[in-house]
Image (tube, rainbow, N blue to C red; front, side, top):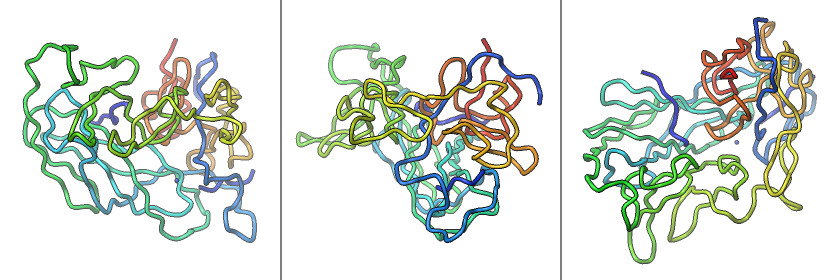
Length: 313
């Protein structure tokens, strides 16, 4: 079956069916090193939409606990051979038997500049049942991981966390493994890849002698010296979308300039629509919307996976 990662950098081009009539979701937009326009080009890029494409991985490594157990999040680092003008997209995770296959994906500008290779890194969070697993990614040597049985200790018992159920899962917390001056430890924290994954509650940090890629209350996601991406405004330290999506704003397009600021023109030429795209599976959407596959969009206007889908009222 196919499933998404558990709760767990770009060029912008120039410029249907039944859909929800309530406001749709926004997103954080591209990372700070991405900008509107043709990066490093001498002439504008022709008006083209973006397409979701796969990329090869170059290496896999465990990010956390070398001895995982069932019921606790295990994170895998995926090194990716990307392109200089790729926009990150949610990786695809497919489970078949005892094999978990992670396929890196990007949004690539159709007919855009090549830009040469650019290494990237993704952190994918998994929760696997007890057993011996193969973790694979196209292009990389696979990992063999033995997941032990779940702990018999009651959830939320005193002491450091053992399983995710010891943490505030509704708030996105998971039981993550770290390494400190005193040795290995586990702690409840929200795993992250980018600041937006923290939902405005601080930023994504890797603490020396502590947790890697986990949300910390400081520094905030945005502020006087840390701007939000196009289409978002900083409110009380959090990037908040300044646009809404609806059947009106999710219209057909030829390129990004046809869309509201912060949205991407995604799909094939002639059928592309303005979308709120998702670099990760974090809180890029608001209201009754969530990052996911196009098939989950009850509005019927999603032209790609890894975009905000309308889940219904």
